[in-house]
Length: 140
Image (cartoon, rainbow, N blue to C red):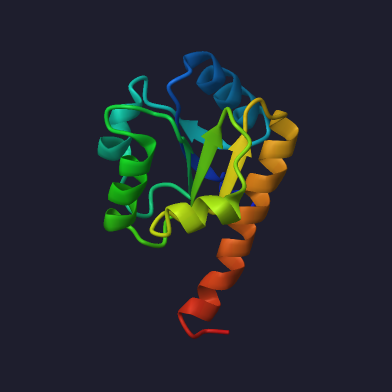
């Protein structure tokens, strides 16, 4: 369930595997999320605008441009955006960040993943972010 029952969590989803995108979009929407998933993952950058989405869920192996390049461009547009990667491989996030220190996803989810588990983790990430926002603005 989203942190505010009147405001759905908005997710921008992109992956090269269209079946994964379709399944995740449908499943996450059943869990109360509002999910946009451009048919062409390369269009993710043109779909993105700061403040429009609560979280970006991005396939790490997306190509043309690469998932890593998309991450870099998203962070140029909005350094506070929450970006999580999807991967078909087990990736240790600490090792990943040592190898690519400029890439710091909030989470790396291994496919396949149960939608209920993914929905729970995405809710936690967005709720944690919303709790931190007043502190970042000096309002806490």
